[in-house]
Amino acid sequence: MGDSLRVLCPCCSARLAVDPATGDVLSCDAPAPAAKDFDQAVGEVQSSAQRRADAFSQAFGISEGGIDALRAEVRRSMEREAAQAVRTKLRAQVFEALARDNPVELPRALVDEQVQQLQLDMLQRMGRQIQDASQLPPREPFEEPARRRVALGLLIGELAQREKLQVDRERVFARLEEVVASYPNPEEVRRAYLQDANAMRQIETGVIEEMAVDWILSRARVTDRPGTFAELTGFGRQA
Image (tube, rainbow, N blue to C red; front, side):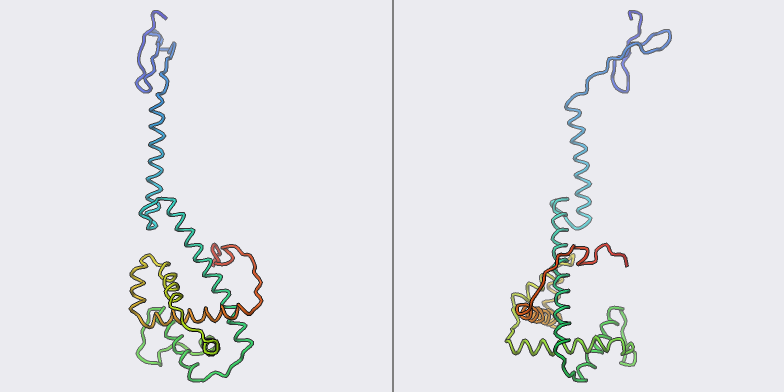
């Protein structure tokens, strides 16, 4: 190959021996890749992946800790949701048995008051305001839920009085923390609750109900049944 033409390949820096008459490549001496170049490339890929992971986490409000912090927050959120679902199902079962086994006479005035409250709650969720009672939705769909609420309120009130169940302030604030934890701005929501006497009364009522449920369960035979997160919360279930 004494008559060959030696050139340097512009794309890969390989040393080529080229036949000057035909243009054929007679030999190719490619340089070995430098180890530091490979390490640098790997580092750049990892850095790019980390930036994408951080950006993904920040889109969900996680400013520090990256994808690991996001996973931890998702797990905590799922645990809270599962615990709430278990508590809601258990309370519903206890209240159903309590109302079924303890029929009470319901004062009509209390039922009427509860019906109107349910009607107003529905209008509030719809963002509607009314000028007088004639604009309320029909009474019939709210009658049975109102009777149930009144009956449970009377039964739980009697139980709390008989067993001297007092509002536990620690449980009230623990319940408040559970409520605000589900919001993206928990500090603002906490202040709003603490400044709203009616909202705090609702939390206190919920705590008394939980204490009544605990009292009943402590004297009942309870059978545990395992279940998945999807079964408890309906996650992934199509409407």
